[in-house]
Length: 374
Ligand code: NAD
Ligand code: TYD
Image (cartoon, rainbow, N blue to C red; front, top):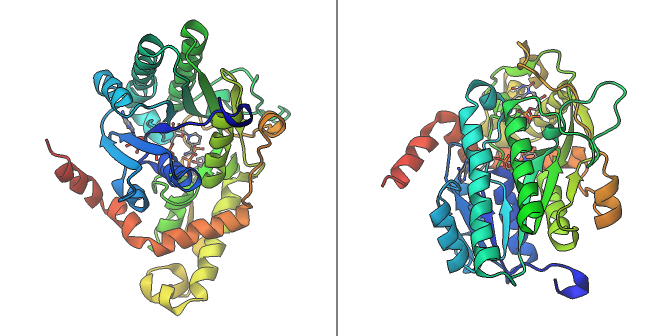
C-alpha cells in the first residue's frame, strides 16, 4: 500500500491481454499509468490477436510473451524475471456456445490454468518473497450467479453461485480456487464479477460484433429463441476503470460486482445496432462505397436480416447486477451511455474492416500458426 492507503502496482502481468477485454485493459493501463511495466502473457488461441496490442508496440514499458497459463514453470520464471507484483487474470475460454459444444477446453484453461497461475503466484510471492506486496486480480463474470427469475433482485456479491452453462461452471470453479488461495495461504486476491462487455476488439462470435459484421455483408442476424433474454451491457473501458478501482482501493479477499446499470433485451439491441449502422452508412458516400453489400446500399433495411433461430441450450434468461457495493466502497459507476457506446463501437468496426475480415475469413488463424510455428 502507498498513497492514501491505496495499493499502487509497479509491474503487472496481464494474462489474456491479446483478447478483447485484456487488450482494452492494457491500453487503458499504459495510458493511465505510463511508468508501470505491463507484460502480457497470452497463448494466442483463436480468440487472441496480436493486432489488438498494436497501439502498445514500441512502448519500452510493454512486453508481449507468447505462452500458456498452464505452463507453471514458465510463469514462475516470468514473475521472477519481471518482478511482477500484480497479476490481472483475463485469460480464459470465454464463449458460452463453444462451452456447450466443447466443454473440455474450458476446464483446462479456466479451471486448471487458473490454478497453475495461482500456484506460480504463491511460489514467487509467498514462498520466495513473503514480505512482497502483491495482488492476484481475478476477472470473472456475472454468469456464475445463474439466471434471474421474474421477481428476483439483481445479483449482489452474496447471491449464491448457480452456474448453468459449462462456461459459467468453469468460471465459478476458478473463482472458488482464487478464494481458497486467499483463505488457505493468505495470497492477496480480489475477484470481480462483471456483466456483458462490448467495444472495440471484441471477437465477432459475440452478439454485438457478430451483428455489426453480418450487417455489412447482408448476412442473416441470428436471434436465439424469442430474443427476449436480458443482459446488462457495459462499455469495455468502464470495465477497465472498475478493475483499476478494485486494484487500488478494493478490500483484499472481497468480491466486487461491476455492472452497466443498462439492461437490454437481445432483440432491442439488435434493432439498435441495425438502425445505427443504417444511419451511419446512409450519411456517408465513402462508407457506402466501402460496404456495397450492406442493406442500405441495396435499398433495404438492416432489420430485414433478423432471423429467429433455435434457442441456445440452457439459455440464461436474465442477468442484472446490483451495483451498490462497488459504488459505495469504490465510488464506481459507468461513464459511457449505451447509445454513445454502441455508436463508438460501430464506428470502430466500420473503420477497422481489415481486422474483422481477417477473422471472418479464417485467414487469421493460419497466419498466426505460421507466425508461431516452433
Ligand atoms: P476473449 O476470448 O476475447 O480473450 C481471451 C484471451 O485469453 C485470448 O487472447 C486468448 O488467446 C487467451 N487465452 C485463452 N486460453 C489461454 C491460455 N491457456 N493461456 C494463455 N492465454 C489464453 O475473452 P474476453 O471476452 O476478453 O474475456 C476476458 C475475461 O473476462 C475472461 O476471463 C471472461 O470470463 C471475463 N469476462 C468477459 C465478459 C465479456 O462480456 N466478454 C464479461 C465478464 C467477464
Ligand atoms: P453472447 O455475446 O454470446 O454473450 P453471453 O452469452 O455471455 O451473454 O450473447 C449475448 C446474448 O445474445 C445471449 O443471450 C445469447 C444471444 N445471442 C443471440 O441471440 N444470437 C447470437 O448469434 C449470439 C452470438 C448470441
